[in-house]
Image 1 (cartoon, rainbow, N blue to C red):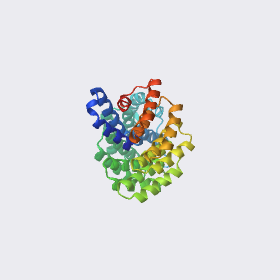
Image 2: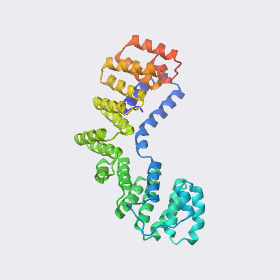
Image 3: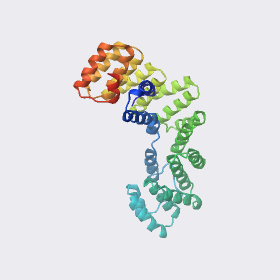
Image 4: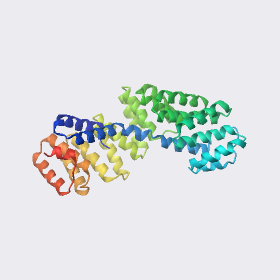
Length: 348
């Protein structure tokens, strides 16, 4: 994943050379830049991951517990197996003779949510809230409604549902998503207490530490942000976390911190091409031309089809004015049959 700083540099180059670009090339880069602008947040807040976590709690809700033990229903069995269309059919039939209709409505609501049938999902989940006296049933219904609203980009409504769910009982998934919602509204000060609460509960993973650090940084408290991220880097062996932090540090000009993340990734056995690219690029941004060139030569010798590597290397060589090496790189690219609009423009 390319960093924001790198894409800003490429964007500037594209604007300066826009007259030379075809309409097809312009459209290609608009799509690429838009995609990268959203990629990080979408990676961390993927709703399906949360749905899977909630599903596990519906299957085995300890330490949360329903007032009454669930009935043995075929529809619930289908739900647990991920057969949501069959679960819907069975649950609708079993609803007529169930002694716990609110529980059946809850499973129906989640099944419809998995099937992306939002209207039916909301109808059944609201039915749960109005008819049940079981705190956990109501909590899970509010959680699902919050996820549905967030998925529809109605963040204010999602916050309302999540807050009502939190009032009923503590669930780290709810608290975490309240933090994410406030970040989506660009309100880091309001988001911070929720990530702190998740971490204090003992259920905080690397993602919670990452977003807590971001809250501090975006609120102007660089010291606490760095302390939080430093702790995350050392406590969690998460490639996703380290890659995100590497990009975050790079965007803020903290290249030595970014290098440390890539070194940790190397120790964890992360893909060699990703590590080599990250190390070489950051050495280049630090203007350590020797280490950057050595790194890119190693990367592109071993992975000659790494298009992003060639783009990064050419960008740095152009910045440094190394015409002889640019000419040499151009010949290598041609020999490997690599064809890319940006490479063509950079080597004209």
